[in-house]
Image (cartoon, rainbow, N blue to C red; front, side, top):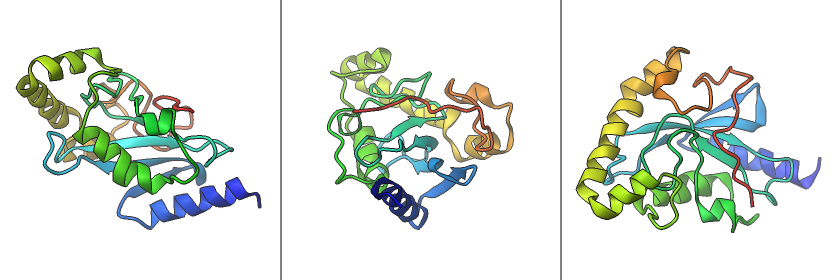
Length: 186
């Protein structure tokens, strides 16, 4: 077994044994979904997002591809595709990082501290800079509409709920034609 394959298995097993709910796509450790909860004491509190993850064959030497499946209002996350603009994944990825880092540190920090100067969603960036209270209200509205527990559970049971999802395909992990919300590579 090659080193990258062993590392993929180790990292995915650590994620599976963590508090995160992980669903493998076709029992493939290189493609899976992670149930991610918004960090406490932020406008994202109470939100639940499904994140699509693909690990390249060269992982951990090459960064994973991650994307939000259901919509999220944030300057550094593309509302339609779910792509994430995060330097640590896009440019400064290191084999020292693992999947747990992404879900326990990197994504919570991104939601806590949006970077309005490097936006994927310029509307959210502008609103954050000009009207922070209106930005927070819109984030909470998106959480309620697209990431509440009721919406999450309904979307998980109903393939026709694409209205509530980003444009990356079905929320159903059995969808073999689904693609990652966005490729984030070094």
